[in-house]
Length: 204
Image 1 (cartoon, rainbow, N blue to C red):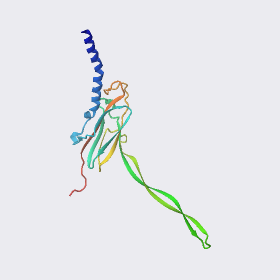
Image 2 (cartoon, rainbow, N blue to C red):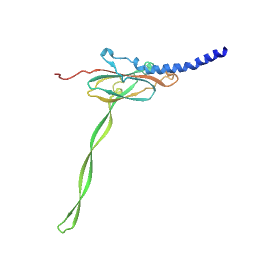
Image 3 (cartoon, rainbow, N blue to C red):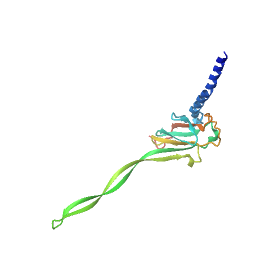
Image 4 (tube, rainbow, N blue to C red):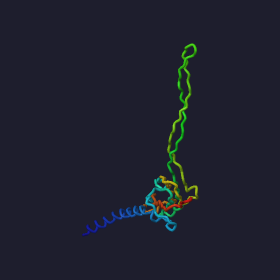
């Protein structure tokens, strides 16, 4: 009987950290649901919103799709780490393909004959143009240029793919309250909201 009680107690002790870890993972998984929304302004949560556990000091890149004439709001939060609020840096970038002309000079040899019938070889320069395409990354928005604003509202004039680059700041505290105790990880929510944009110009 004593052995059975001991076994039961040992099983419970072994299960405690497992349960705690799963709860912490669940906390990170649902972090975005605790981010402040702008429902009062007509915004609806977008399904591209994400939550996750990140190591402090890391950079995360997420690709999203925005649609023509839709208005979007992008914001970040970490309810379990209030000391990080207002410190998240993020950028919106887009890969753009641009074309350019490359000009090369080639030389063409031509053979002719002079009045004495002697062969004369002349070299004529010829300009050849080639169209080259390259993909470059253009930064559309950087909150570091706007007093580290933690949200950004914009309207897209066309359907496009954007990259959201999130820089996870480091905490000054040694003990993290992120739920992943004993580590330097924190729970972060990337909230994306949308609503129909304002139509401009004349309508028939």
